[in-house]
Length: 417
Image (cartoon, rainbow, N blue to C red; front, top):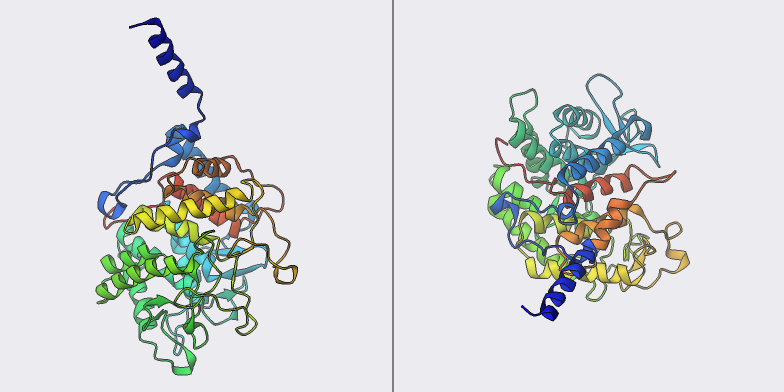
């Protein structure tokens, strides 16, 4: 071999070694965990050891639920609640998130405590709301609003099915029976006293709120198609085909609800994905903000578990990261019109900021992206350190979910695992 050839090969090898880790990572997987039971570990692809990754994920879990941060509270010997520390209340969203995290980390003690509190204080035991959960309670358990927010039920059911698969139903709580109770009560609602099913039966989509008002539209951040696939496999409630159809419809809805240039979604939308024009009962739902942050993370979950909409989801991930990157990877803010323009001052909810919750979910969608810049988003999540005033409730829970996604720790729990 000639000297010039040897030199060229050597220089190429040196250049590869000096290329940032973010330029050398793999592409999204082409099969989902329902088939493979395997999970991509983006942090390992970035060069971190499994020991470093395990320690990092555990530290984020411990940080989120430490007594000091007052998110996870055990008020007695048998229950616990997740506190929205900004508002000093308890929400079905947070309780169901906490249960999903607990079952993922194999924390039966924590899961059972959260479920007991939810059932005792939040779940309605009599008609017309029987089976549903009050979306907001005081920390003493008294209900602030008896109405339900549909995403709470979505997570309650899925986490209970996973608990049944992981721990069985003979240890004091029949997890599967509790999940079936929620589903059966929900889908049997007929509008009496204004209470409606969790899923709009005509559109086969999750409702914003299961009452006459909220039954007529949806929230894109409530759409997690793979959860319906979990229900179709293991809820054993006689609705297998219906749940599978809901998963397919939900994926198609997300195509319509995301902006074709920015990838941003509104907080609320009609069932055809169109905007609601900001005038329904004074609700301002046309903007991308707090609810909407969850959409990238949810699409990453559906890709990881089902991979049933691979081409579109990869394009979506690239699109939304491209938009946020164009705003500055360290400066993009938490509120936009869906076309990417800034909200008018009168429509902003608080001062726009570079919110850690959105930093987290923008990183989580790296699971589906094909461009190199996605690893920069993942690196920002890894490097982020909470500062005083960090909201360990919403931002913190989204941060933990993102670490679970990117480390391969957010998994389908099959029976007897």
